[in-house]
Length: 429
Image (cartoon, rainbow, N blue to C red):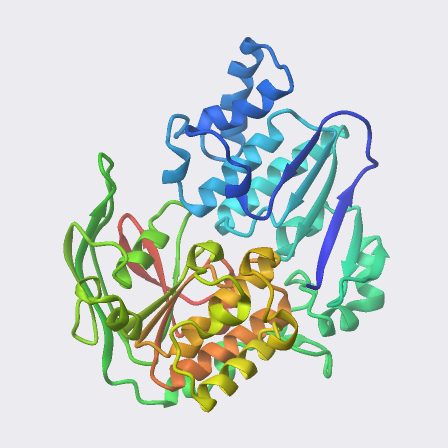
């Protein structure tokens, strides 16, 4: 997948730190502070030094208020921050980060990059950052390595000089540039796929949307022994509407996504899709009502091959078969190439695109997406926006939980912020 790799300084000797694209793969301990201490203990740190360092590492990533929390109860973005804390705790000489801000809200991403900037100022750590969300990381980079759609290097050098020479080529290859260098609505003519804006979609305002697909009234939910995450939340979504839900990490967005499709039951209030309560429906009926794309793609996989995953539960009809073939080609996962591969052996970005396919093919009344643009390049996001517009024109209501402000601006006809357990109308980016 096209992308950018930025680096700072030259590598010295000493400890190395690595943050995986999927944070869950590197969290090993039950409690938050124990997980950060695990890496230090493995390096032979004295107990007193660990006790002093762990709270500071958690403070650096904004988890200092939850040192004894169970790691599995954290949101996806909070788990990613925990993985970052573990990597940063030992002040490694080489720090490699793979999509470190993918599941962070904008404020948390900016705060984390500020931490990296302070590390850079010390001049003791080399950082290599693989990232699609380049706005925050761009000012940190001394050198830039640009990879094309085939994984081969397009250019390497000082960021400004690379962009001056190859901006059009980078855009055509699907590489994101910082907003101030290449806003999507000012891309050079013929530069390739771009993310459209809502204003370019006349159907968003001209198509009649009269029926209500989703009704949420007085929704309340809390995990056992904890405070209320959702408290009297109300929401109505029309058929064919595109709604984005934004909010800070830990505000309850993923919990709300599961409640909307009936995978969790509220403590109070009601959720109805097309007049039916999804949590009370048998599995087959529920899948016709609603589909959910999990924040972690692997949670949704049920088959052993990509081909089986895409076709699972679909009728063996020629139209359906050809539709699956066309969809997978548009997602950059042609079945003739990827069909026999295991979903679990795909890259993170490929897994995300595969996870989108079943919901787009099944055409439920409501489709809920949790961070659908994770690890996606420019071309991937543009394709997704167009696929979702096609789906909403056919009547499906789409609710997308996202920290990706560019995607929200391109996708949403309405933006809601989850704050204090309730949804608040917010201006589109």
